Amino acid sequence: MASLDPDTIVKSLKGQRILLPDLNALLDGWPRKVNVHLERLRRAVDSWLEEYAFVFGVHDTMPGHPLLEKAKAADFALFGATWWPEAEWERLEIATYLAVWIDSFLGCFGEDYEQGQLIRSQTVDFMRSCLDPSPTHSRDKSPSQITSAFDSFGITIGNAYDVEQRDRLLRESTLAIEMTRKEQGWRLNSKVTSLNEYWEYRLAGSAVRIVLATIEYADGDMHLPQSIMEDENMKALWEKTNDIISRLTKEILPTSSVNDILSLKKEIAGPSKGPQRILQSCPLLFVRSSTNGAQNAVDQAMDFLVEKIRDFEIVARQLAEQEEEQEEEEEEEEEEEEEEDEATVVKKKRRQVRDFIRGCRYLCTENLTWR
Image (cartoon, rainbow, N blue to C red; front, side, top):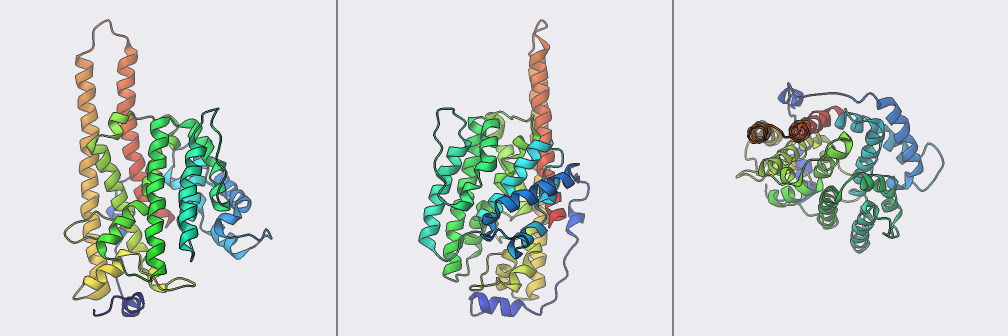
């Protein structure tokens, strides 16, 4: 294809017929569940959306505003109830508000790049301020209306998390926010990214890792030691979960993801206003396909998705087995007079690792349910 401008790519894709695979079948046997508080959460989320309507660009408080109704129709409550299906009510509610906010914030940047840079910098400072539970800490002033909504849930998360957990959540959020700088620049310049550029953006900018950083909060009783969170198998588990949900890692031939396959039609339709953009992998794979066009691009995406699901299973098994072996070693070293409490702590840690792995599986399967 001679031209790589967005309009040319989209025109070439339009009218092509593709056969979408059964994505649910790929995750057959993985857990699926809906939180018992779904209907209560729907009412709560609708109320939150009305109170913080400006998050979606609604500055008219009259009921029935199209943007507000569109936000409600997205059913973010189903998103929260399926991603955290075992969470207690209070944790479920707060985690869902975070997910709604970050999804909206990452897509809020318009035509003013310099203003976007200022908001990005100030927002990270404001998030850090809200997450800090120190009684002597003075909270920063919110730089914008959309940022100000973070304190409606960020303070609660900060009070529940320790320093390491807060730092992890802030680090992942900062990285995702930084990716909006690249996305905004590409969009304003109508640039078609390379596949490598796309993967860098997609890996960090999808916000999947922010959701992973909330699994412990949503669980309510989970607190994995830093040694486990920094373990290579745990890091790989995060990577593979992100691969499955939002994108796949950089291989010899970079590929796609569940979201990219599901978003293909939306990408071709284009934005409601502004220039056409290509920020999704199937069209980029289409550009590289010499035969079979769009179907070949989707097939390539599926092949690598299957591979990454297999990689997830391997890493998850290694992480679980690793903790089992460590438990056995520690039990053998126990003195006869040693109290049971230490053995209980070891067993709890092992259970929490299994729960974290199950939480990652929920994120993968229920991403399809909500989509």
